[in-house]
Image 1 (cartoon, helix red, strand yellow):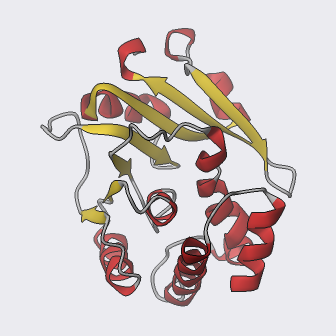
Image 2: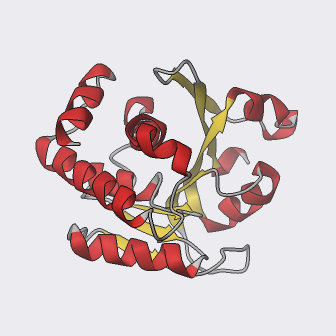
Image 3: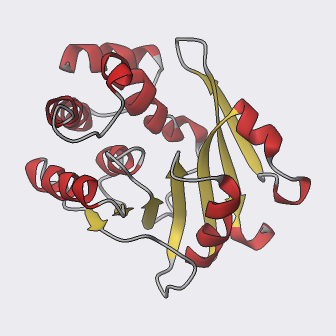
Length: 206
């Protein structure tokens, strides 16, 4: 697994240090192991876990959306830890909160935090809504819910100058109403030819 991840990260020209690469390898192995008992990812994705999940999550690194001004991030609907745990591994200096309402997946995230000693990560086992007092520099989401449902929740969670980042397909982007179009879009392709997009919305422009 480690050699595969090293090779794939190099192919995508991602600037990730050796310590983080080792942790990503351990993370992927644990997901595949636990996936036999807990439905963390689809069975069909197991053989493509590196590109479909690890690399897809890590592409935020190339987007430039995470700047030095970002001190804390909340990932809504983290599931097995994509993208939140991957971001936490790549950016150990940033505090990451993984919000996951399903108890089995939340327990897996707690376990992986302890297993990999990810001290910058916290787990929140709840369904996030607009009624909260928590504020963050950035909100992320990847396949957590429909955009129209996530958008107002993200707004409520952001600091005054915060930003919302969403992983989307090309089709998803075209469905967004004109008054909610992202401020920036970063497009990329995975090796299987799938076009992916990262949309960024700044709170001051919501």
